[in-house]
Image (cartoon, rainbow, N blue to C red; front, side, top):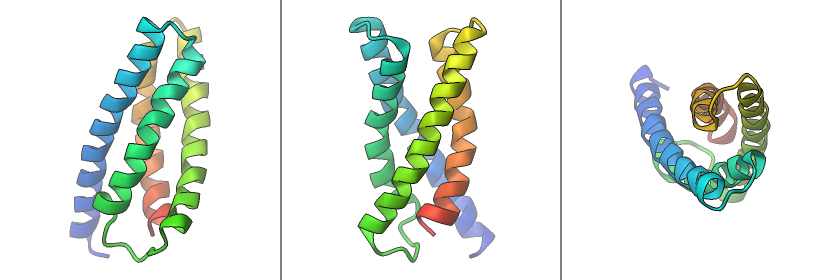
Length: 128
């Protein structure tokens, strides 16, 4: 694969990531500040709500030219990525909240870290 395609995929991944973060934050804000669920439930709602959008966009937009033709196989691999990302997200958000950071700042820092992890696993495992 050429570096041009890799760069295009990384940019597409970023665009989808920004849209996913917006969905995540809308759900997080709604569940935490309006409905007043606790932080773990709110982070979970935002995370999994944006995960469905994220999968579909990466499957059909970011990594559309990949060899993986089985949607169900890619989805099962994606579930592994999601669960890894989810546990990293919960652990880091809880740690940062414990260190007295605001939940929204904690989530933003966590998203930045999980972004790199997600691209690498998505590119070379899920949508290879």
